[in-house]
Length: 400
Image (tube, helix red, strand yellow):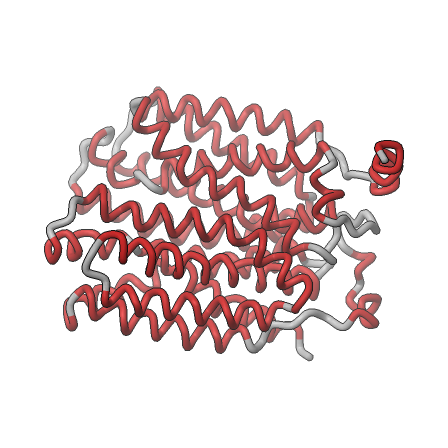
């Protein structure tokens, strides 16, 4: 099989999953139709992200056992059905359950499958291929924005869920049919030995969780995600409140961030293959910290605002491209699905930490805090080393 077909399937899937980031387009129409408050409607998005991140653990285990195609197909069906059922929602609870829970389970079941399959097919280009796969997720909201706007205006907000859910179902299930793992007897032909970092060991999730390296990497991922989402989630508010620009101008930042976010996933993932994951991560954390410190204390105008949020979005994309590859480098690809599911919980938590920080701190202080934790992450990156499975097994035997 041509391994680039797996990448094609991964990109198709991720673009449709990433459309979840266009949720804000539904806020006002739902408020207008049902009279709900913005705070109540936005909870739908938070539930979706939380369920999505949590389910990746179990979905990862399933795809490790059953293969990516079957699990991604089921996930695509659940996503499509959940969103279509949201068209019948007349209460907030129904919206939360149909779109947030059922749709979130669908996204979570599907998300890990293309990543895990791609990393196994391209051991020599893990960073670049991970970046290609997750770039689709970053672009999903941008691609679906005009589609969602058109359907809402044409059919109304409730009916739009029906058509959008059907589109998700068709494309995700179609992309899933291109996913499969490489044959085990052909691993040598895939140049496994040429991977940038390869321990030669395949860690089970339990073995991975018994290594201190996992927790260092997990907190590094958390710190990077908090910093990125802090700006991405509040880009419009930052522009209006801190830079004193119009709502329309601030809205342009959302489009710019999406493009730089997607570019960062591909470019920084590729750089990590060439110059090492840790070296690339330390550069990313350094740039993010500098931007955060500047936004905290430096003078801001519209061009500088766009530069800062673009670079932060670019670096944020790098985190989401490098950490799947880093998980495979440190813990092998055999249990990549479930192992990365555990790692990905750092991202899931960050989606709630960022908004919480902004609630208790003004933007300037929140940026300062984000810069500090990025500096801490640089120190953690210098400390972490590839785990040795032999040492882990010996410790487990002693414990027994």
